Length: 253
Image (tube, rainbow, N blue to C red; front, side, top):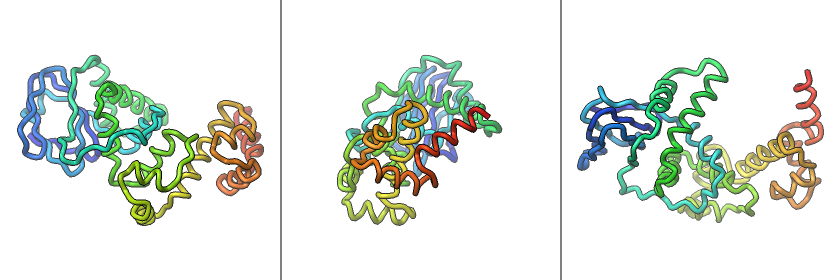
């Protein structure tokens, strides 16, 4: 039987022995209580029986949030080989948690708490694959259709690094000119992305860690505090001090 999903990634949990075939290749045997992580986009996935298989559907946004959550230097992750079958398998240690995660992944989140609960459950499912050397490569590969997403992930994985266009292009196995062209086709640019990454990080540093503006400026990669304040004001429409005071007023209210 064929598995279809609107999302780029699925994770299966088998309750009995089954086989999985990807793109008509040799079937892969999967014993009961095993998980399989697969890339669905542009791939044909068949399984011997869906009656004994649970499926968790994982969106681009969940993948992006998960990679950001890991806080790893993604520039060091090997590129996934396109010729490789996009599947990872291993035993499931928490089948009850998986069942709940699979149910939530197919339900529309009507409240913010439901959205966060689903996010946490799917993070738990994905984390089972962390010991696989190819896991992060496959996660990055699933974001390949949107180059800007990959650029965001690489920069945010090490925001303190002195990034430039050539370094990021190298991580994606692209020339700088081709990366610029691809980003332009997605209505963005390298400078817009790195500024957005730095401003997101700046707000977290200001609100959560209580650092002063000079410290935040340096941690975001700016040599000039005054220039950092200028960029922050252009981005958020107010200075860092105004942003912090306004947020605190809302919290008190």
